[in-house]
Length: 272
Image (cartoon, rainbow, N blue to C red; front, side, top):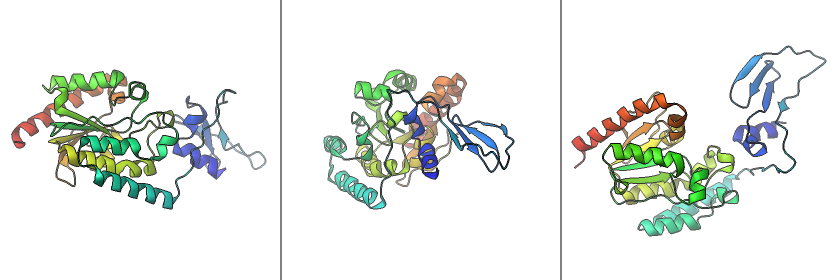
């Protein structure tokens, strides 16, 4: 049963049924942990009747479970080496896009399309997000749909055009069920992400969402939302809430807007 728990914690439950109604029961504590992250009250248990450790949603007969095989240490090391070689060989934007499109990333087992970054030369802002979503996959373009409309509206409010903004995801393929990318998936794509930053030479990086903020700058949301730090390469970086968060919680837009104005003022005063 530990193998099943590991898969569930890794996100495979979303492949069984994207409606999170599964329940994990902690036999030691007698607490029901729901798939939505909430806990129920302590449950009485007896020595003669042990609760089942898992109770997953019934899966429609038309849906087949997708099991994500673990990446062996040797395999991930070889994949990262291949990504590093491809990144080094990319001398310009076109070369980077070709490298991404030809790269055999683990997510290509599940994703229909490769979604390349939007590259600009010396953009004022490079936005980094976690992964393409369903809208991006449908349009073959990163930051599409409602999220893209919200993002470009915010950039326009700062007086920036599309030529002023680059957009790079941490991985270039949609994850199964839209879950967060796994550690090995992030590691495999990171050399290509780093090369995108090196080639673009942005004035500042805007990390959107908790995962991108932690991966790129080691900053944690919500505590460090709107703080200006620097990457290891010395590039100013600011974390803001995810676009999905702003869409579901309109009250979060105000602190994000204040943070963006702070970043723009910083750039005007410090970047020639």
